[in-house]
Amino acid sequence: MIAENVAALLGELSAGNAFGEPVTLVAATKTRTPEEINEAIRAGITDVGENKVQEFREKYDLVRGGVRHFIGHLQTNKVKYLIGKTNLYHSIDRDELAAEVAKRSRNAGIVSDVLIQVNIGNEESKGGYPLTDAFSVYKRLSRTEGLRVRGFMAMLPAVGSEERLGALCDDMRKLYEKAKQTDERIAYLSMGMSGDWKLCLAHGANMIRLGTAIFGARDYASRP
Image (cartoon, rainbow, N blue to C red; front, side):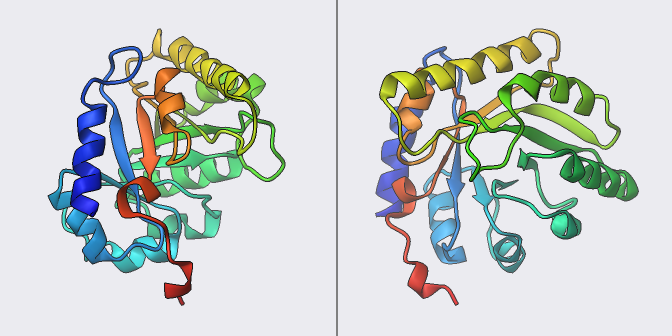
């Protein structure tokens, strides 16, 4: 099933997004076994993303290949476990976290690629910078030694009309383009999960994070 799902998705994504840009498919691997992840990689998945540091650490040496993403909420005291092993951090959602990733990266003699998380729906349950602050945050973090800002990430609200959700995506695309106009390092607008990825691609996302669409429904009871 995994191989078939991956083949179908890659076929559908081959045309790119609404702007004709290539789309990066990140497999969201929360609760998935290394065997399942490796099957997805053999089927053509190039990028894998974990939500939890414990799972990232447990699976890191067991997953064969793949660009490694961290896509979940990140506590500052767990950054040390990811430095040098994560190719892209999607969820830089506050200054404290940005400072910790920057400090640990400098200490390790590396530069970490990051996305700035925007709380596009102004939801109390989600982290991220307000859209009104996001560009100034980008300007500030892009000057921070140890960080390389590559773009932005957002999660759409779970409810809302397609028109409203599309408008939120459009706001994110405008932010992305404003930064990209003057910074060649800006490359990613990470927006879209298994329930809304088609809408996000239609409004300019070029990176999506899919779990259920690749692996099927999660079985949380199988995790300790």
